Image (cartoon, rainbow, N blue to C red):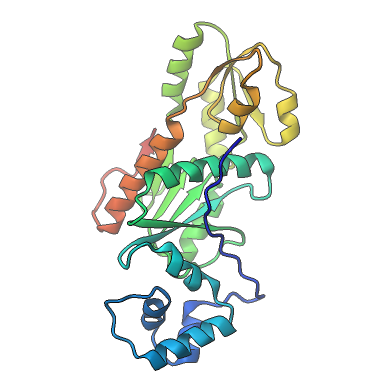
Length: 279
């Protein structure tokens, strides 16, 4: 059974999402001052009167992102990273996303980065330092990029844009490993990608492919076959059956390690010559 780490989900309960700029305008201070107060910056000198006024307005407007960000930032200089997922509301994809976030949590240093989950609709996000988009289509990724001017990293989406980092599976390497392991025919079973370019790459790489999109699709998988899968959900479902399985159990961790290295470069404003990575 997949383990989900406790990660705060920011949800706006108002028809119009309140931003840090709304809070600053009502309090008569700068957005930076609001950020310092809600993130409890000890290195900034702010009067108790101003702090009280800002926090009262935060509570009045039910301003969640800043209040949660205060708890997510383990240190004053830590960075807050938003994580978007595709196929929200689908149990298969939600479970796979949970496995991905679990690996992010293991790889990311707690005193350096905090993670917050963001859902639909795509919008401008206050207080985040970078965004990771997991298994979304290219149009959605571009939409997020147009709304947010922070470093963006796509995972399992081919964005074809040197402004962003792109991390995808090395399917040719995966095929080579499967060819050696099975030494015969096998089927590659995976979740249907949100990005059509990823789907096309899978179909052009493997001889036999099956995509799962709903829980019911798992019941259609025949036991006893040789199966390669890059999905933890599918691997767990088929474990204990007569199916001979190959699952790259380091793939998610390796992707998360690559994400971390990309973030470290982006946070230091280091120009990067390579922006596309196959893992």
